[in-house]
Length: 203
Image (cartoon, rainbow, N blue to C red; front, side):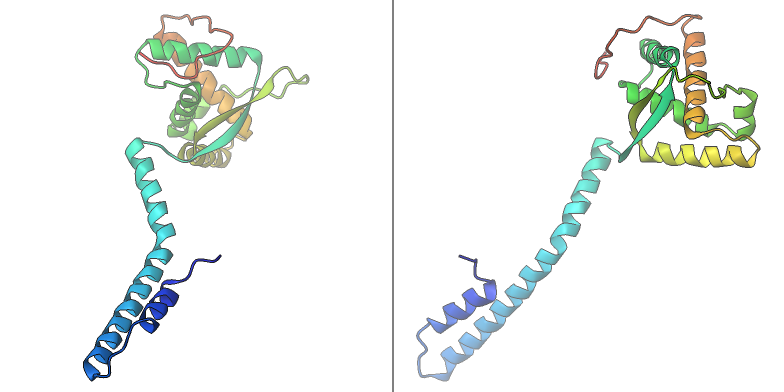
């Protein structure tokens, strides 16, 4: 059975009341009717605002927890590039880095590369050429949408400066430079990563 609305319930309640013959109770009923109508309007307004309040609460919760909207990014990497990236992630963590997941390390590499100017990126050129044979595979990472936006803006800036990297080549260059920096900070070597990385590193 469908649930009666507030208006229906109020109307039924008024109809069931015993109405004396004096004018005073009639005024009371009219006052109550106005009260019921006001309460119904308030109920309708609250129902209309509920989705907005829910979205606002979710947004505040994300800000409070430091969470951010993410997007999936596919990057073509050779086995050597992928293993070097994993080793660099572990080395950076051991040397005080704050990226506690591999995806965060990848996002950090992209952010640092995007923060460079087109001239700086060209000076450290690590863009790979297209291989005749496919030796790697596409790896998928969940990164912040803000990182994705900075990456796209940097690629556009590179194109305007005369460099034309594909998305995957640009990301691979960012990772290669992050590997170079991690190796240098780790005394010129990198650790051997395990076959399977931990989901999250904890100190």
